[in-house]
Amino acid sequence: MRQRVAEPIRIAVLLSGAGSNLAALAAYVQHHADLRLDHVITDQPSAGGVARAQVLGIPTTVCPRADGQSRDEHDADVQAALSARTPDVVVLAGYMRILGADFVRAWHGKMLNVHPSLLPKYKGLHTYRRALADGERWHGSSVHFVTETLDGGPVIAQARVAVLGDETEDTLRARTQLAEHILYPLVVAAVARKHVVLARDGVTWHGTPLTEPLTPDELGHAAMQRHG
Ligand code: GRF
Image (tube, rainbow, N blue to C red; front, side, top):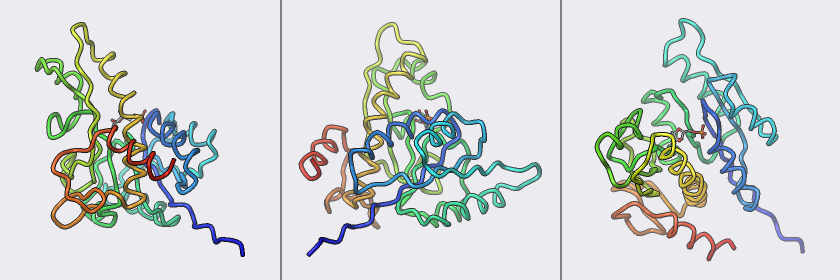
């Protein structure tokens, strides 16, 4: 008797920029048949990520914010586009708009963001510049569940990057993004497979409450053991 093959877990990506995280996710998903990059949504028609999505053959919806449109109205357009393909996980990858409370609540526990700092440090913009100005010895990238607090949702995992002596904003950005491109797909996969869950009291990892952010090593090792 032929075994029934489970449907892949569907992942939607919202982006506004270059889409390097989309490319990293696509490279990961290519080797993991249980996951599918199912939809890309952007508010920026000319974003590099749109061209990448097209090359990758991922259905893409462009939802620009029209002149005079309120944030709630724009959110509703994005929400309608997103819901039409019923994703299991929603991944913010350089999506440069602040989402309203209703939108965020609709995807509670299913929506992730990646932020280029070791949260709770340096929420908001210009994280590299601010970390260098403060003389930080470590920087990095965090992946968190999205809640109504900007860059303030429960952190799932972090990739740490040492700040070098002759560091500039550009070099720190480049190395942090390399680390982020390893980290984000691992976290997306862990949430998609329900190994990481946003529970009432915080984040759990294989059923155990997280007391500190996971590392790429912890995530990668567990993924290799379970999925090859
Ligand atoms: C990433 O560095 C991420 O940390 C931040 O926005 C950037 C998006 O880059 N939230 P890309 O569009 O994925 O290249």
